[in-house]
Amino acid sequence: MAKRKQQPEVVINNLVAKHMHEFNQSQVFVDRKKNAKRGYSKHKQGRYSEDYRPCSFMESYMQFC
Image (tube, rainbow, N blue to C red):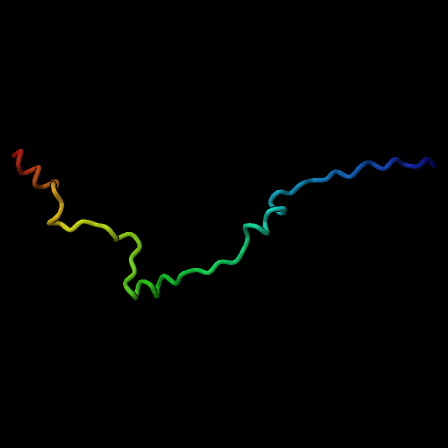
C-alpha cells in the first residue's frame, strides 16, 4: 500500500470563544425593589413644576378662542 499524504489541518478561528473571557464576567446588580422602597426614582430628576412652565398648551389655546 502506498502511504497517504497527510493534509494540513484546517484551523477555524472561533472569535466568540477567543474573546469570551473579556466580556462574560459576573456583575453585581442593584436591587430595584429595595431602591423603590427607599424612594429612588430613575427618570424623575429635573422636571419642572406646573406653575414654572412658561407656556402651557391650554393657555396658548385659550388665547386664540
